[in-house]
Length: 380
Ligand code: PMP
Ligand code: GLN
Image (cartoon, rainbow, N blue to C red; front, side, top):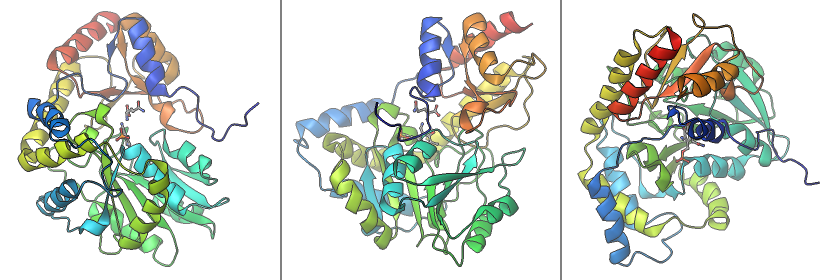
């Protein structure tokens, strides 16, 4: 028997709920992926990449034209992010970036702090690399409990994983949050692994602030991004990692021997697309989707405690409907109402009875309307 290397389940909740949705012909608002088309120009650029013969190994850190354009793109952010080429490593997706950052710095027996609820890849990635996850719960409205965080730090703490904007809640770390974290870890060797895949999808007055923006943290963090989320192309599995020269060196020491380099025609297409991509138009497009979702669901018997500040997802409370566990409710909803969501307990290491479901609103309006109508029929 092969010994398990991590405590994650063998089928992620996202695959499980998607399969259940398919089986019951349900509208799938569970796994986070768009059901609308990507920009035609991006499709054409991918073809162009291969026609222009970007078909052999790209350099290990990334295609120079993509790295140059990422320097420029980060410079052009509303809140400028100054990075140099040495800070950037292109990765085959953000999950790989998180895993590789952990592999680069974690030694057997090290502790890594995880803030729950959290994305499902963190804990297995820590464990496979010999680390021990140490859990700190976010507060009721998904704010960080910095007192609790301070209390779990030991001499063994090697890293903390932060996720802002946050999956599943859409909460964004404000500058003061980063200040607090920087103060807490000031006299330690703790590295921040910051999952920032929803950086461009921020709504209302909310602004994205990267760990790499922070003067005290930029020397001791990995900030990890995903073109899958930026350009609604989750199947492309390409992202990039920002880190100091020292941390980038450590990261590449592992990356060289894991995937070595990343899909070359995709890197060409992403580099070219960055030159024409309109960040504000993209942001508005997604904010409209969040608003459309909220408007379509407003008369259903869920309770909304907070609108998502960012990202692809909205959490809704279903306690007015039933006392079922969130997993049982998600299964019931998929089988009976024909709408699939993700039970919030899936983002915790211990079964929690959250009374909440996460729905993905990165969907066509007709999909959202269809889901709302089905729920209307099943729940009233
Ligand atoms: N982090 C978070 C918070 C995510 O929601 C996702 C993806 N859905 C990822 C990482 C993984 O990104 P990628 O597909 O680029 O590996
Ligand atoms: N990040 C996506 C989500 O949160 C899922 C990605 C996956 O299926 N692993 O829904």
